[in-house]
Image 1 (cartoon, protein in one colour):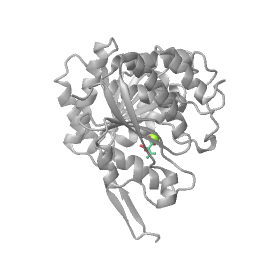
Image 2 (cartoon, helix red, strand yellow):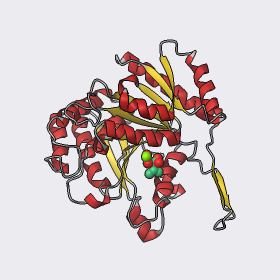
Image 3 (cartoon, rainbow, N blue to C red):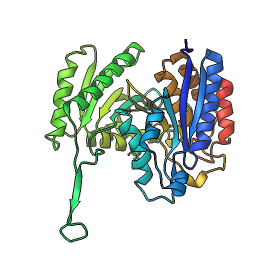
Length: 356
Ligand code: IPM
Ligand code: MG
């Protein structure tokens, strides 16, 4: 019988600094693996801007099928300065999310001790929540079109699309997560974020589904915020949030705000999750082309993505050991920003690994 604690991981280093940070993440995963009796085999895939420039290919349907055989995907970054915006994002990142039905985008917003927070008088005890961004629907579905293009009467639409089962499966995941956090001693509160005062169709669908589902979770405290107000409260009272559930585009925007209040893109990670299929874990900061190959980019976001992957694979102890090590290293580095950490990319990776 195959060793249940052997994990086949597909690695997409991708563009810019992606490969460098993923290398540090693998180093940390392997160190944690040794300590906890876990085995990884990593298989590299070369999807990204360089390959696109050479071959014109993003990612083929056959390659998607190949990826489905892996337990998880570990992604560095997608985005190349020589490739027009949209091609790689749609052709690789979003194609992976959609075809692998990774309907949850899980983005923790946690301020580690020692990290500068731009919010006055807020500390690690105030900023520890997690955003569940719906990841396959809404404004990202491509519904809509253009007519009379290039004329003064051009019409363009991009439709926010949700059906009840998409909403329900995302809410279910969020309620379960709130329950799990409650068991871990966190508040176990779920806040729905939407815009019901304007989105009287889609917002109403989410709101009714939420109100119905909460009946099945009597132990979970619930709340509702409009998206604009949530932007305000996240800055003024981030301690109000524990789990936030939010449609795709609103979630895209608010998780960049979240990354800033947890110290910056240098530490922000996310998981694109299909609870029944192949999930993908990534630092959310992008490819940072101007820092490529300089060994100065912060690898902590990629290391955090690796931690989330371990937790998802059912290895909470190993994941916790990475969390503790990252937390410790955060008190030692000078800043999360590239070139200002006081250490190189590989030194930060080594420091995390040696703490495990
Ligand atoms: C993100 C990114 C992507 C998104 C882009 C690159 C398509 O901003 O992962 O948040 O909009 O989801
Ligand atoms: Mg984004």
